[in-house]
Image (cartoon, rainbow, N blue to C red; front, side):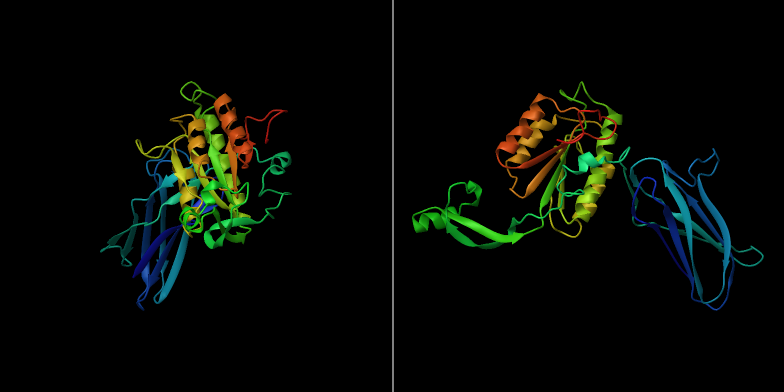
Amino acid sequence: MTIEAWFEPARAFIGEPTFLAIRIANAKPRALPIVRISIRLPEGLDQTHDPEPTAFHGHRQRTQLDGDAEAVLRFPVHPRHRGEFWLDRVDVELSDPFDLTPLRREIAVERPLLVMPSPRGGVPLRMRRWLPFGAPVPAARLFEDSEHFAGVRDYEPGDPMHHVHWRLSAHAGRLQTKTYEPTRSAEVLFALDLSDGEPFWEKADAESAEGTIGMASYLARQAIHAGWRAGLVANTHLRRGRGPLRVSAAASSGQESVLFTALARMPNQPTDDLAPILREVGRRLTRRTTVVVLSPRPGSSLTHEMERLRRRGSDVVHVVPAGAWDDDRGAT
């Protein structure tokens, strides 16, 4: 007897159909007349959209299985909010036709259900025109891929100083600039402001922060679908004492999972102003990185940092999350 349990999909947005799948395989020729399955769901994960208060919060089902057969049962689950949901176990009970000698087994669900937020109210077309990866603006420019070194050439006015090959310049007696292979794969850095202005300790608003996180989740999905590498920085932290939340825009296969896990798990309370965080991150930005700042009401310090990045040649887009739009705001 083989029993497996998993969520499908393992990563979903709020409102998407989500199921807990249980596969039961009977390799013996003798049938299983009684198979009982009991699933106790954690807080925040319901069996229906609007469940009524009951003593048992979860799913229960009785079925049977023929010999040399297998069955896959899917139980719907409905998350109430974003986050990570772990199941302690799934109880499976097998018994004889007279239910005299039941055999119980506990099945662990190794991977959690990762529920990501969804944007509130959608994204207007006027905002998409400002985004480099949104319709109708394509990501058609060529960029230098810093991970693929191509060679060196003589320094030309306007070359970034962090591209200067200092050791070779000392050997040649004149400045030499490193060159890289061209690529169309650009990077986008989402900078999330979870406060509703400055200073953050006076402008904390959990509802506004949830709207910002939801919009970032939607835009990150659009950027990755368009072939962009997506990174994240926010004025909050996952663990106290670890500094602001950061996810680099790396090209590894698991980077997308890291990004959406951070969006699902991050708190909705700011721990600092976004301006000093953006100032520090901006020192290491490359020309192919577009900064998308999601802030309901950027203060004077954050506005100054966005203008400073623009003067340095970076593409900076300010996006106002849903719920904070008015006639004069949206994306700039």
